[in-house]
Image (tube, rainbow, N blue to C red; front, side, top):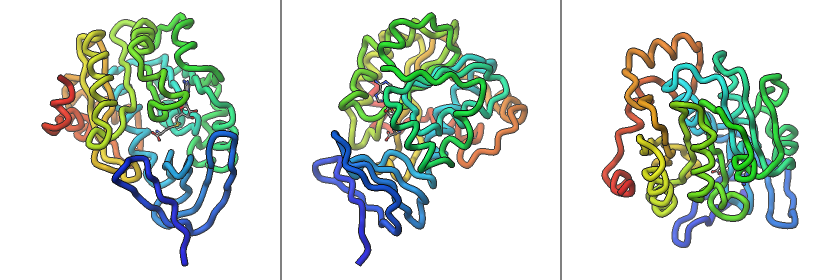
Length: 281
Ligand code: SAM
């Protein structure tokens, strides 16, 4: 009989992934950390059986949180990643030649070390890029103290429980706004609204008090089950309305080879289904 990893994040909904080969299994002080091989998703990282990332579908999540704000901005050179310990977000940000400086603020050095060892394809060398400055600190404390000047801030957090909770507060969003350069863009992971509507509702309430342009966009990521995932978008600039032909030009210049992102998907991602649009208030 095969072994399965069953995620029971929600009271009445679960998803299971078959474990073909268990590569790592450890009970830490707080949680059970496992890496296993699945035929469809490749290596899968779980914490207490909750999927954090997989080799197979992480590109969708990472591309949509990087290429959308960076190509919409058009001249992003200074980028801040909050969280992102597996290195996948840094991998995608550093594909942009326009980016000269990335500050990645991760609270847990263990996640970085573990991912480098067991999931090297995730970061794919990003931690060795001289443009990356890795800061091991709480993202909220960092944001309070930084001089800022970031063109894009990407919040690649865990769910709003435990250390990630502070990254969903009004006060953190306010500090992040202060750390943006003029016309800078803040993007955030906001869960799967069909199953976690309050997470998006709360972020959108905070964003609409802070930004001239506050909305969200979506992408469907198979292992973040339950429908499309929402990404918060906040800026005082007009980057959201960058025309398709301009995005196509920037995309061609950037010479990316994405798995999921296209300029047309970028534009379409802001077209919201009714049940998600209603959460924006
Ligand atoms: N996208 C994944 C998901 O939703 O399952 C999670 C990605 S994982 C890279 C998120 C990272 O945020 C973890 O490495 C975690 O240690 C980090 N993190 C959590 N709270 C944090 C905080 N307050 N400051 C900085 N990093 C934090």
